[in-house]
Image (cartoon, rainbow, N blue to C red; front, side, top):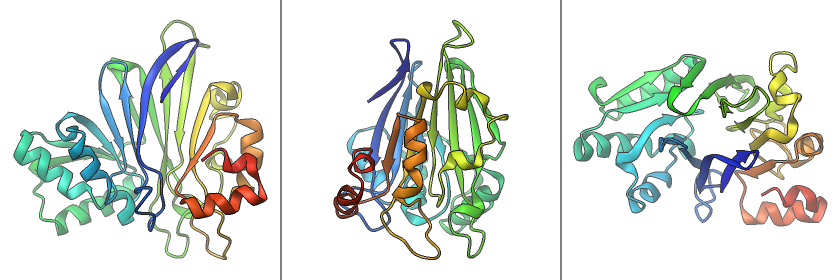
Length: 257
């Protein structure tokens, strides 16, 4: 699918997987963004993502890998991806994540035996992709995914600027794994470009039908107000069984899947 504004396509989005940790049929949550200049951005690389990228012959084309957190359904394909790119394509893999997530990513890659010549890790909060006028912000969501041990976690905001007017832009928000709507963590003053033009905002958010004390994902009922404000809300990280249950309780939210 393509995301754009004023009739312009700003980025093409292809989900490699939309399921949860145990949903092998739907694939682990991972998304590819193809920018206007042709850059290929990968968001997370779980254990089903590498094989899909290999089948699509895209391993050597990836420019940046964003990692939201280090649960295996979001990172377990990264080591093989790095090895493939380095030895078969002679390319170093550029990784973007928050500072706390970077510590875990580095530890994971050390365990997998990667020398630092095979990859780079940038842990700055902001990134600007000049060729496409994309401003990227990493949102720390550590206390809102696996709070039992403050497991490092994050979401990502992509701001696409057409350069033609201050009001001609689009925003893509990728929640990562979180147990509240990510917009609850975004102050309306600091993120006025999100709240002032909600029709320009596209949110890809994890969602679940599960209810338990330490829920690591956002229950669909919590996302109802978000859906009312942002019509372009799309959800992932759930299997067909969960959607069937959500459909019985709230068909509108099931349709966001």
